[in-house]
Amino acid sequence: MVEVQVQSAARSVAPQDRLWDVVILGGGPAGMAAGLYTGRALLSTLIIEKAVPGGQIANTYLVEDYPGFLSIEGPELARKMEEQARHFGAEIVYGDIESVDLKGGVKTVLTSEGTYRGRTVIVATGASPRKLGVPGEDELAGRGVSYCAICDGAFFKGEKLAVIGGGDSALDEGYFLARYASKVTIIHRRDEFRAVRQLVERARQHPKVEFLMNRVVERIEGDGKVERLILRDTRTGERSAFPVGGVFVYIGMIPNTGFLKGQLKLDDRGYVPAPEDCATGIPGVFVAGDVRYKFLRQLTTAVADGSVAAMMAEKYLLDQGVEPGTKEKEAAVKA
Ligand code: NAP
Image (cartoon, rainbow, N blue to C red; front, side):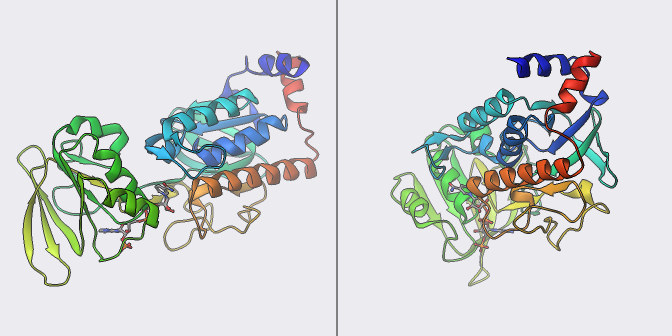
């Protein structure tokens, strides 16, 4: 009861005017897990999210590989994660992160909406869809070119659709789109899928899903909206026009680390290298989720990172002499 009163008093101070124990960049599964742990540990916790909490799962049709849920819709799981982080005291603000200053005992985060200060920072900004980079893609984005089946699938009822890619996302979202489309063709550049067998088989057995292998997209064409893809056969070099009403691109992700340049070491693909303890090498700065270089990028590994980063942030604060809950009490006394 005391804890709830203390936290509500601290909340009367604007997020920009507080010095947070933990500032978490990104409200996906890694950020939400970190916020749940640090909030529950009575550390004052701010999560900065760009748009919709939940990250990639907010745009995922079904999640079937998260322990505890036989099957759950991505947006619902995202909502539950947000609810749980908030329940334990984490606060969420919205804004685009523009730059950070991570050195020193107080780190600053500049966003489109304001500047926030934290004793520790957990970078959990995830990754964004990779683009094909072919002519017509940008011009027809939102006019038949999409990167989110959940967001846009319903606009394509009765249409013939193409999904580009051969990983879990392409196979999962291709299957999802079949509920709206008259036909879904999953177009992959090799003769073998990268996706797990279960997803490939589920798609293969769907009467409205077909596979087109060994093809790459060279151009996306249409007059004001997508009408056809120009494909090249990677074995013969032969080009062909493939008529479609929409194309969904699922060819992997790019880490969201542009704002970290000059602050944290990044690998050649832009990921933050960090060992199992999620420490970045800068005191008080940790990294979690898909933005960290790692072997397996899954929901489960993202939340695992989030919890490790949170515990490491707490340990760092204790080493600095910051007692969990103290700052909330100070703020409450001042309020
Ligand atoms: P991914 O596993 O990296 O797969 C990307 C796919 O796109 C690959 O098949 C790749 O082909 C193809 N590709 C890459 N660049 C291309 C280009 N320029 N043109 C044509 N094709 C291109 O990415 P993802 O499917 O988005 O998955 C990302 C992570 O999320 C993975 O760890 C995945 O397991 C996870 N995930 C899991 C689920 C689930 O239900 N469990 C659902 C979605 C995502 P190659 O195979 O030839 O390299």
